[in-house]
Image (cartoon, rainbow, N blue to C red):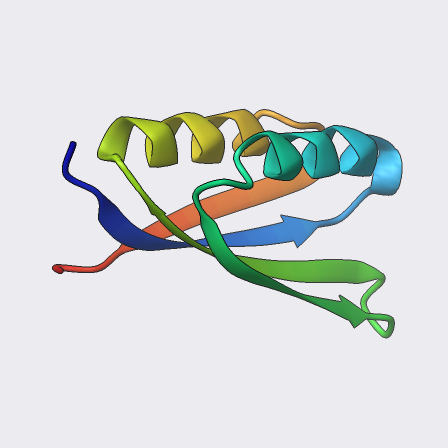
Length: 81
């Protein structure tokens, strides 16, 4: 199956759903190339970037599930590769 490379940008504004977020990232861990988290203490938010190489439907599913978590926003950028 053909895969795509994408970057999922995640902003965590409330920690109430962090456990669910970590569970999702673990569940899709086989597709994740890497991730980086940055705590922005001055604004009381956390910024996470997740690089992923997976089929389009897998990327969409993960991004959609993350975006439905309370206090968390996610946007996805796709490569042309």
